[in-house]
Image 1 (tube, rainbow, N blue to C red):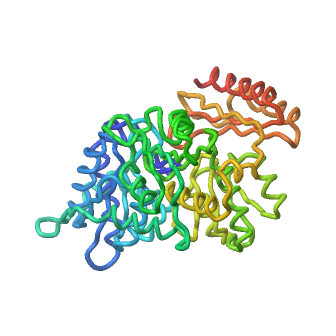
Image 2 (image 1 turned 90 degrees about the horizontal axis):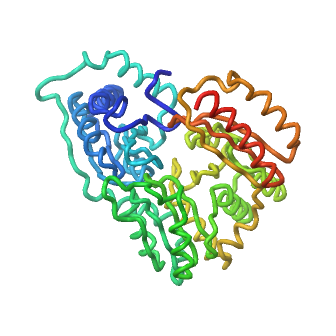
Image 3 (image 1 turned 30 degrees about the vertical axis):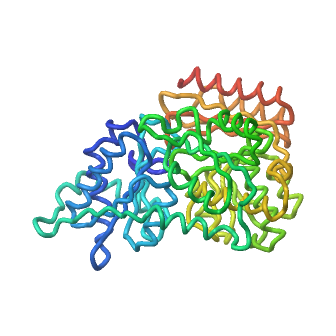
Length: 449
């Protein structure tokens, strides 16, 4: 692989490589060149979140795609899973999302879906990367009447609303439920309030006035303090926190307590097993998933298998094993019976349906998973050498594992999208967690911080 793609598409600081107009134009040309292998007229869907730099990247991609004789379908701000759905629904060759997900507004990114609504494979990414980085794409171009056109799709929002609502049980509604949602000033700001309102919920939306510069700013799935305060102030039943591009969900219960992806997976796995919808009684997790979730699943006879970190890797293993549910502690949850990628809105609808069906509060449902004490430290790094080559780290990790025994876990890995080393420690006590997370993070920081 080259230098373009990380674990979740292409990402970087806006207006610097690779997230500048010149590279975006080349990426558009390469994506168009690859999709032209199919017969008939070709189309590529482009959607985005609310970042200021989205306009620049959108226009550069559009120019590149049209220059290769492929038409562009512009849908504007829409959650990443919504763009995956529209790509498949409109039988387009490819779907492109302009978003840096949960990152700050200074960053931007490009995610690419195939016409089937799935993210590109490693092999497809490698080919596109080679076309761009080798410069070969610059010498391939049609002329005159062979160039493409760009169209705006005005009903994309409505199509996605219907799609999401159809994942909610027909015999249920959300009447009587007071829902507060934090839209992270991102891609869900229009569509999410409409969906939950139309299903009967009493909705209060916060952080839903994007300016182009306030996406994820102290709000959304990574910052739930404002949501918790609003829940308690209104005595609401539940809170929903989306990230900037809408593929993640973190919830807040009626007591203002955060409910993470592991707990939500546990809630859904237990309910799906009892209702006969959990094929093979199996769930796909990642190494970041808490020991508490693993033990809870095992007590109920639900098996689990780990994929590499990243929702695309979770989906690949789900397809391989036939599992219908998988996800990450960060709030990416995939319901294979409903969508081909993680979708924060669909995740919320499934859990609210369980609340309505069982008559239980979110805190009651979440009590199924007794989370082990855990700390995840994000250490900013200047480079990413092999973890085993960081002086003193391997020895410290072995010492920690010896002391923690089978009731603790350590994971040290680099972020695939940022210059960050993630240090995660789980143990039976908070003191033990703090002791080892601090020691390991200090070693990393001193070596490459």
